[in-house]
Image (cartoon, rainbow, N blue to C red; front, side, top):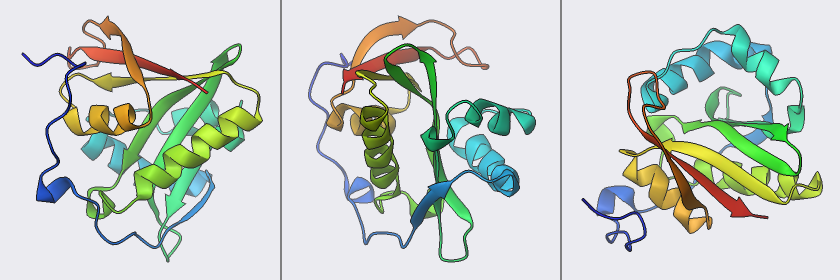
Length: 167
């Protein structure tokens, strides 16, 4: 078993960034739910009630970012919430498989962290599956560190890591 603190292996050609995807960042719209639900099912292996997205995004609409393609179709999103004083939390974050490694996740995370700072948050947190090595590597590049192991955290019983970083 590899310790999360060990350096990550060098990226393979499949994980190297390719040409940036032509996307724009915008806020969430209720019409985005079917596409976002499909991205969540494929990328996060979870299925949520469609009404959940709008209700979670209602408290901090600026924290719910959508990356849309040239046809205004969502190809990625980051749903951030503010549940703890002084802290933003990445509740859901996924990019469609067709545009991964094209900078979409980077643009979403950069915008989210900037919005978190602008709102006066001092810390950002998130949870990630222990098996999601690519996501863990991505978050580590953003200076997120593992602060806890969450046993049986996901609906299928998989463990998760609780990660955090100072803003």
